[in-house]
Length: 195
Image (cartoon, rainbow, N blue to C red; front, side, top):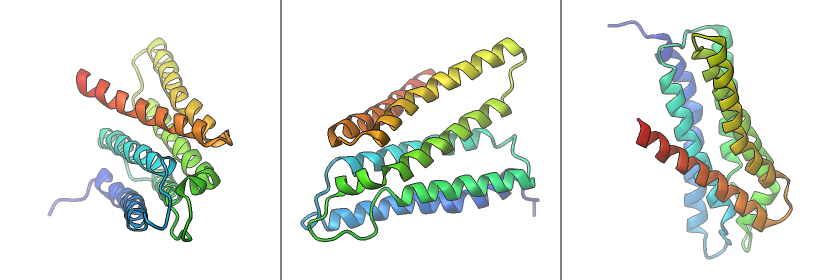
């Protein structure tokens, strides 16, 4: 029997909370759809669910790209545990676990968006900077350019996230969440075309 690689070991720790995060979103969607006659679904919460699903796919892809770089160490294990648990908590705030008859998922979103969006951005930023550290360029100029491009790309997500978190208007929040989903889809299409 072959020995387990560092990537395989860390994946065991990473996969469980990430899998549970996906289950949280799927269960919330399923529960909400079953109660659609009693609960107003709206647009904000489903759009947030789409955003987290796209974000999960991107994080898993980044994690896969790191497979040759991951070594087992206490800082790596603690970081992976904290980030994946934080992601699970963010996903658990997408849909309510219980909503009263006549409830509104848009109200839920407006009350709890800081937890899901804020944690998601923090996690994605950590992954992006981790990628910068793992993929050091051969010259300082290339590394500076890569860092600037990463910061610029993160700002495309930061601005709509801050708008969605800070606004008090549902319409503005919907435009911000729609923008986040558009950015993800555009990036996925762009990277699939250049790959």
